[in-house]
Length: 236
Image (cartoon, rainbow, N blue to C red; front, side, top):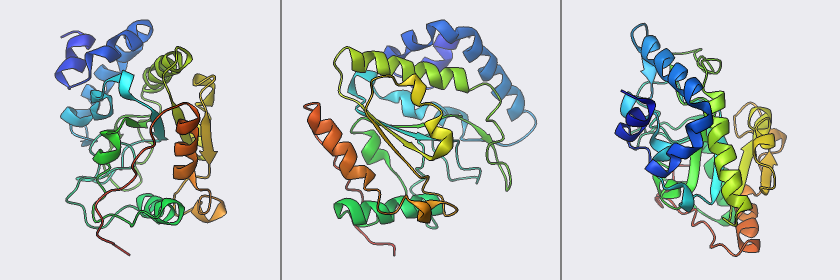
């Protein structure tokens, strides 16, 4: 099976394929590496969800929200950065902090679910810089050096080129890891800040108003704002 066939079988929108033309060898290598990893350990998310973020037509992407890697807890990751499966009742600390800032910034009550599909459906690309991870405590970042970076950079460069051609776009880069990818987004308005992790959120994430800032930057480009509303039931 070619890399094109594998991506299409995974549900990737066909308009993404040109983005990977110049990194086809690297993409094939990381796909093979992940396949080998799955013979040795539990790898998350499940195969059918690894490329879930890329099911959207790239022409519809107006916000990039860049995460680091999937949650390493089985049952949590679904292929969308920061999002968890709808059935999860105890949300990760980072997501709880995102919800708290969302409420403080734009008045959206913390949702009953950690499923951020409603944002993805509006063209918010919830993309991790590594699309897979080994499951288990202490495994965060375990696939950071597996070979995903050239693939993710290709996605960002493709969107930056579309922005240069007139497509409205804003990128949200939380934490030093995400900020390292700013160079792949020349000309794209950035919302940079502290990561929402419980280890760092109190050092500047809270009060940073990223959601209203994104909508202000979209409006300046003539684009409609993101409706950040999720399920209304309050968790806290």
